[in-house]
Image (tube, rainbow, N blue to C red; front, side, top):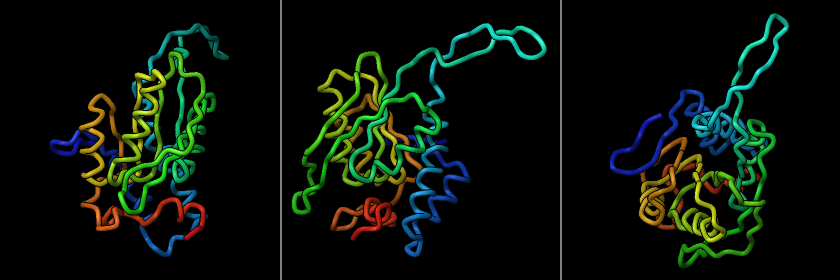
Length: 213
């Protein structure tokens, strides 16, 4: 894991993650393989993102003897995908944290203004719960910033943002609007093109996940 210059973002550059992202970038990679790779990368990234979960000691007995083991100390977690592409990352997180609750935020990017428009928000009980927002792409940062704002308006204080591929523009936008939110990405790309897509990126993640155009 490494930081990226003056931007507040952690790039999880594990070799397996980088290898799988390269496979996802290839235009010939079909939807089935794309979805599987996204789930696998989400699990690998989730391993690092949950590294700071608090632990507590518990008395157990192995087949050999009694001992003090460690377990997660009852921390409540929430996974919030940004629809629709974020859905592709949910199962990977649930594979790691089966008891996590899942909310949904629906945002789409206006093709002319490139600004996010909210159309749906449904969250689990937010009391004493840490939330991880998941979205494969962090492009302009507008949707991610708006999603974080929606969570904060619900009284949520502990929020992390997890994306597969990001552009510097998006990272800087979230840093500016929400300096308290930690950002984790698998790759930090070069720039955005005129249509607001990440370059080199991997295309429209939602279309590639679901096989739409």
